Length: 361
Image 1 (cartoon, rainbow, N blue to C red):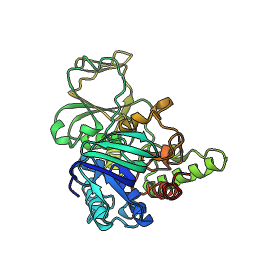
Image 2: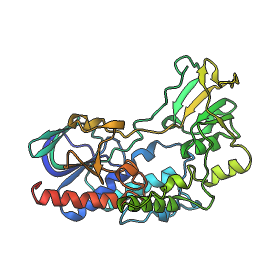
Image 3: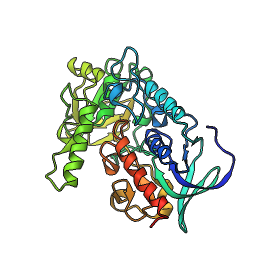
Image 4: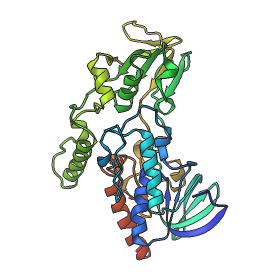
């Protein structure tokens, strides 16, 4: 939908974020008959997938990367779909279910206002009995405090700023990180740039036959065990850190991915290790993760240690009219994935429907 004109309206539920988590919530909200709206800051469907690097591939085949109610169709010629295929799927998904997505609408803040939560936006004000925050993490990239970053003269960018290896052809590039993004970007650059891959600990590749299906199963089994008071089975972390997608596997098997230990500091022309080893770097790419994008919730004063909001499932412990969806295991096993967000979305909507229908009692 197009962005609405300035509004002053009341509704049962406001969903903040129109990416995969917001759409999964919308699917279940549509089935309840509650009045709801999805506010998306982007100017087109697709959420964070619209900003991914060109070579990115899903960790699972299409049939195991679906939102509730609508299987993702295969991408011709590819077992593991790329970002453009996911964007098309999300666009079709919101159209198929007639989800009331308004964009671009930027939420400025969520406030308590009597029995409602007041949602202030750049296009007006809304009151809701309940709010689902589904803004994800892509918009808050994390770069560690490394000595010398301020004097390094080369280019510095985070995962969010990387697109393709063409602009780095023939250049010296240091990639920092031991997760999936670092491995995929390092594999993308291998053969194009003079690559240095730096990790704080030796990267742990999952077995070649493990993909997103197994990761979702491991995350779900861990959550069930913890909820039942059983010993922690380790979940995804017990399996490894990096899914060996075909491009990563190919680069690794060719010997193009040779990680080295984290450097001590940056100087003007590149990294320096504690033993004096130096590497010239035209660019440093920080594949060092993200924080939840929760600035719009600051007026509620809910953040505690670590910057997170204490939750019972997806529901805020201190503000039961607020649910948080799609931020990772913190708000549901594998809830930051396409396949994983469905169950916590369903549970959140069940609790919201009960709250709204009982008048918050």
